[in-house]
Amino acid sequence: MSKPVKFVRNTPEEEEAIARGIAADPDTHELTDEEMARMVPFPEWIEKTYGRPMFVRPKAVNALSGDPSATSYTRARPGRNAR
Image (cartoon, rainbow, N blue to C red; front, side, top):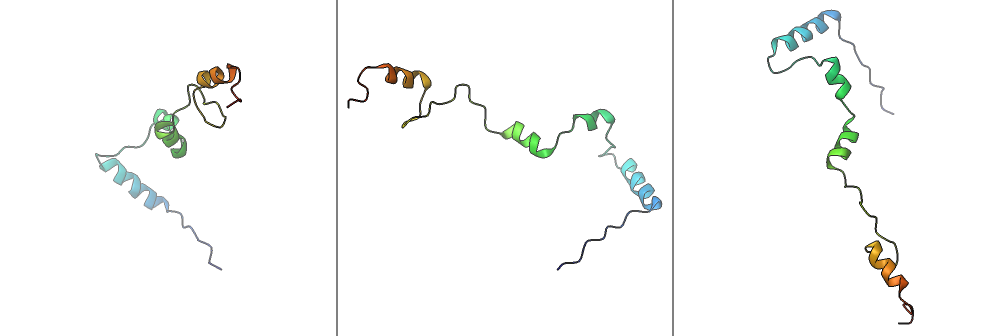
């Protein structure tokens, strides 16, 4: 069995040093409440951004999948099973 991981919290002095480092860095900033409200979990964002597009018209399921209008036309013809 592996040992449980023990997390050590930062001391207030370390937290202040981290905050000073963030404030001194011109390439970063602390997030505002509006920025935090706009955030979404990564799996939701990636699915929305790169996910498979929704079907406009789903395919009809039969031996051969195809356009629903073509399938209904074929099924409406008399003797379609005679072949």
